[in-house]
Structures are given as C-alpha cells and as structure tokens.
Image (cartoon, rainbow, N blue to C red; front, side, top):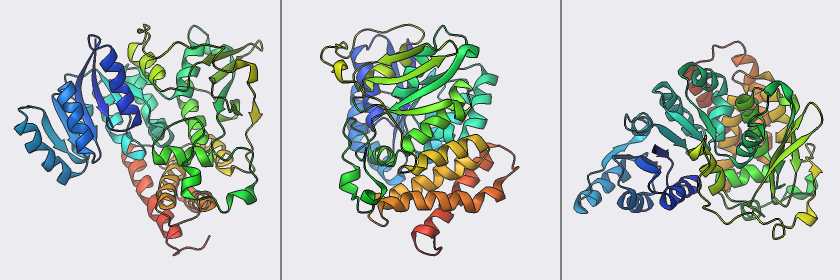
Length: 394
C-alpha cells in the first residue's frame, strides 16, 4: 500500500490521482492534500479521503477552511503557505509524494520530500527544468525513486524498462502540435487567449495549455527527459503526432523503435507510477486499436522556426546550470501576462528570449544550490516583468 501526499490535489493531475485512489481504495491511503486557494474542492476531497493534514497556499483561505472542517467533525490539520506545502511533502506517515503543483512553486516541496526520503511521482515539469541539476543527484544520494507521471515521460520510462541505457540511441517525444499546428508565424500575431486555450486533444489548466500552444511544453519535456534518462538534449527529438495515440517512442542503437500507445488520458500514467514496479487493475477503458484510428497515424517534424521556444529549450538544456531556470521563470511570467491580456501571444516568446540573453552571463559559473535556483528564478521574473511592463524595450 502506498501512502500518498498529493501536492496540488485540486488541479487536473491531483483530481485524476484521486480518481485512481477512488478506484482502488485498498491499495492507497491519502495522508496529505494541498491546494492554492480552491478550498471548496479541497473540502470535498478531505471529506472523502480524510487526510491527516492539508495545506492551502492562501493563508486567508486556510483560515476559512479550518472552521468548516471543525463544524463537520473532521480532524484534518490545516496548514498554510510555502511551509505548509513543505510540511505535507515531508509528512512522516507518507511514503510517496505526488508533485502536481503547477510551475516553479512545485520545486521546493519536492526537494524537501526527497531530502526526507520520499519517492516522487512527478507531474511537474518545472521541477526538473529549473532544478534538475540539484534534484536528480539528490534522488540518487537518498536512494529514492523518481516516478514520471507526464504521459510522454511515462511512455519513455515504460519503453526503457528492461533495456540497457547504453543501447538507447534517441528519445522521440510526441506532441499533438497544439491548436496552431501548421500555422505560419504571421498567423500567430493576432492569436487570442481563447484561441490558445482551445487545445485539440487534452483538457488541462491554463498555464499548461498555453505552453502547449507555444510548444514550450515540448521544450520543457526535452530538458526533463535529459535529466530523467541521462541523455543529451541533442539526442531527443520532438515528433508531431496529432492523433495523440502514441505517447512517445525510443530508438535503440540497432535501429529498433519502441512505442507506448494508449488513450489520451492521464489516469493511466498516474496509475503506472503509483503501482510501480507492479501493474494495477484496469481503471480506464482498455485501448482498442480499431477505435483509436490507427489507420490514420501521422508524424510531422516540429517547426522550430515557427515555434522558436523549442529551439531555445534545446539551447538552454545543453548549456545547463541556471540557464533553464531563467528560461522557465521568464516563460511563467510571460504566460501569466498573456492570460491576463497584458501582452500578445508572440510576446511570450520575445520576453523569454530577451530575459535569457540578458541574464545568462551573470549566472555563469554560479554554484548549483536550492538557494541559487530560487534567487535566479526570482531575478528572472523581475526582469521579465520589466519587459512586460514596458520598462525595457525588446
């Protein structure tokens, strides 16, 4: 039985993790839940799963939740803020932490969870993009497991099972292509928030959906795969596969290609991670190749001249150090500004490029510590916000 602390339980991945728990209650216990501010959803989850402790980032919302639980006769302890997240991530009674907080905010709780000896089921790309050079050595030092939940990285992980890493030639990360597949750069000038949020395949939160529209999500996954599987970014390809049936592939040194297929659902990769090294019960409907449209599978190259953030991610991942931290921070700031209607779609890319160019020389050679990563993230957001606010001309 796995004892879970779920960080970001009211988001898409968190809810689907609880769906897995709900289908197999004898295999899991929920020890801790955290959210940003959605205390209504968190309250319902607490009523159902009765964790020992919960945390709400918004302190005011946490104070609203406590009396509601008390009135319902529920003894779950309510914590708040960053310290509350860390407390849930390091809770003694849990053995596995599901990292489903969106963005850089997910890094620090995962870092402390690893320090305390927890296995990590990771959905948060930014943890390894911004802090992979400190997280992965710590994983090895503590002898804990990093269990990928991202559908692409779960697919790669499953394909690699039983294979020798020295026999791996390339990783082929598949991409749906997002809502703007096949468009020219000139056509992206007038993209609206509503356009960008209309993903053809996946139902995700706002930030992740915009990353899919810019294709930055694939850039983040390149760097994530580099850290997870110890392979150079130059040996990782992005393959556009609109049908989203093949979730990723690997090519071996003898030329063989191994692929993992399934429905476009996050429930299965979550289940694969939480039951590892075993296989759990059939929770989602079985994959049927005749329903899946396998007669119409197509592959296309990723156009990095249209979606230039992918090219930047290759460069940032190859440079390593704190460069990916800067790239990730600038992207988060720019995406939030776009969602708020403060900048245009292509301004996301401009902001990220300019921030990386400006800060790269200043971070060269810095020690890779959690403190350095957090400070660099903060500095990059300040610089990106200055660009967004027009204080610095791009």
